[in-house]
Amino acid sequence: MLRSFYEWAIADFIFRVIVIDIYRLVRMAEHQEVQERKNCDVARTDTLNSRSLSAFGRSLLL
Image (cartoon, rainbow, N blue to C red; front, side, top):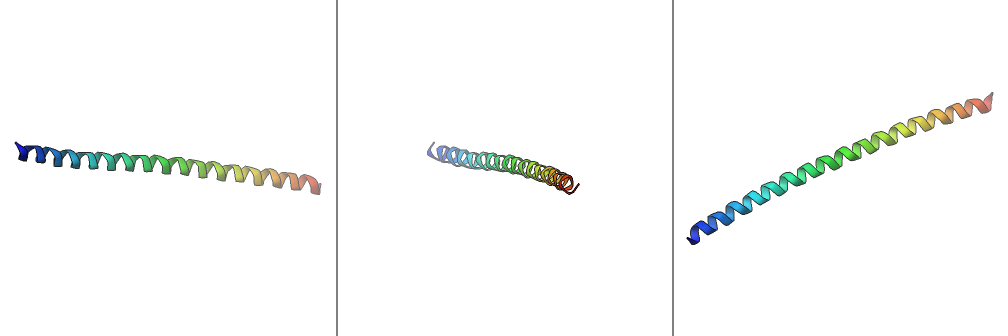
């Protein structure tokens, strides 16, 4: 009976480690995806700002 308890405890521990690792990998992937979206939005905003500044600069020259 004690042996089956240890087998169950080891199997439970291994299962929990695997589940927690998978959960962490998924969370890291989601975090990375959010960061990439933020970087894309920043790049798009920078492009729009540089275009508007260029238009503003051209209007000053006219």
